[in-house]
Length: 469
Image (cartoon, rainbow, N blue to C red; front, side, top):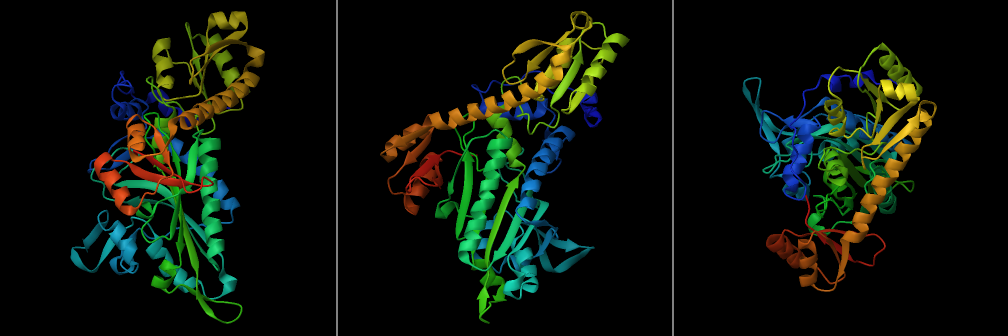
């Protein structure tokens, strides 16, 4: 299947030719991969990011997979304003305290000072629940399930592209329910959707569990999270889902008339996944050659590169080959060196490269190269379409197995705090069952930059300690 929408890859300027080795400087390697893969570049204001076409195509692929599952859960998409009256943000005390260091505020517009300041959306609970107050009257209005795809602004002091930027893209779901159990069940159900996206689509193995009180979303009763291990042994909060209890309902007077005629507050959830998932993709799978993408999420699955004398016969054979493949395929018949062509797609993580030249046509075969392990195989022209499908499936499994083994081997059971600190310093996750109160948690963070990532589901109160992005 042709992929003309990726023709910009043929025109894009090459990123830097050398990539810092992961083992020498992991943060620098991460930035280098973003640059050579043409995913994003720094914007003109501090902490901002310009997402390039290829980087945005990856986000759209993630969005497509997730949006379909959100719809299957019965959640409708809509959109809310990005400017929130300051008075709304201050209604829930814990919420505003949690976000106050990060908010950006508009004080002037139209050449005049505003009567009421406007907060640029850091998250949308307050403006959405102001609407829930009007929309929910009776038990017949419940559950109310909505989602929006939007941008948010949180002022970052130490920005890093995709991981922490002043503005980023995400989806945020918000629901209202009649009972606490229904809300909690839904929050966990959406976390399970995120886990499916991470593991089945992005090939990233995760630990799912509940956040500690200090790591909980501002204003929530419980926060659930999925936490993968990056190649350097650090954790990444990949996506979260929150049981908000009735805290926001009480603050915004979101009540409903029950069947028995009594007036009750609703129970709410919110949940989100952002463009930091692209950062997770990079740090989970990529190597010293550049980006590596799991086939299920790669916008471009296959590139066909002509090799040697790109005469009309070779170009015609390459085009026929492209037409025979069901997966998204780009043909590159530019008259440049094979090495330059190969590197253009290797650094961008295109899962499969097919090489075809005059000798290949004479032999009735092509060479197929897998991006993740670099393995080459000669395949008969008649078997290419079938082989492509098989190799993409095999690569998806290899990448997930690799992530799964990293997480499995990276979790160390520790009996004491000293053992836990030593394990984390060696790039491991420490799984502990000793008591960690708020004071101890603060000390671990201050003295060792170690946080409680979560209390994993089904592990009898054990905690996962790690350094994190």
